[in-house]
Length: 255
Image (tube, rainbow, N blue to C red; front, side):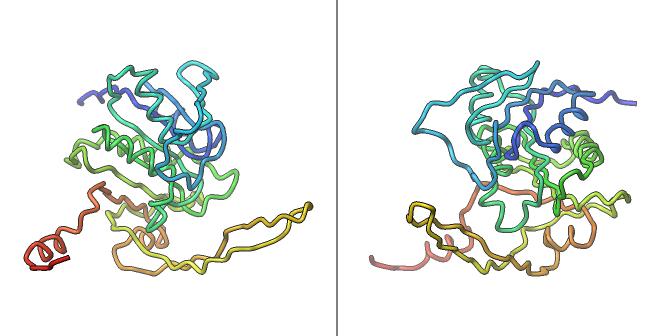
């Protein structure tokens, strides 16, 4: 039997270094790999691919191979590369396990996805992983073991460095996962609400909310997870609409 390769893996997330998801990942991956953790010192959900430029960052070691920063997930990857790996790339970056799904349009807001995006930009194989419908106290161990299995067969996917994986698992209800499906991004409609209220000093504040409604699209990440299956979506940073580009290139438009 071929021995599994020991990888140098950078682990981060957007829920914070104290989250159940990242603890489960570190515990599982450390069994066979060399793991370094750089994670936010507070929740950074919906921070997207933001990079901190307007104030200095701090990085604090809390135990061996485990650091926190007061920045975003993207900051975590950047600091890890320069301060821990010193320009030498890790073999892989994993981000998560996020407490809640990252499917469809939500990938544009997600700090979990952003860390994988940064890894892809740096030409490092990267995986973002989330548990949909997460409830506080839900066991994350089986999800972490599943990630370890994906890492074991990662080379079989034959991905280029421009592509990373986005994994969404259904809520762990104690039963075995049904199956794994390779999916496309889904779509959901938001009925946005902006609540306007005065604070105790009479100044206005606003709270953005709303109730989303998923569209049940065949072959989508949401359809897979809703059916109790695991969704794996290959994502790429190339936003170019190649079909439209070809069409526009043939048009003689004067602007």
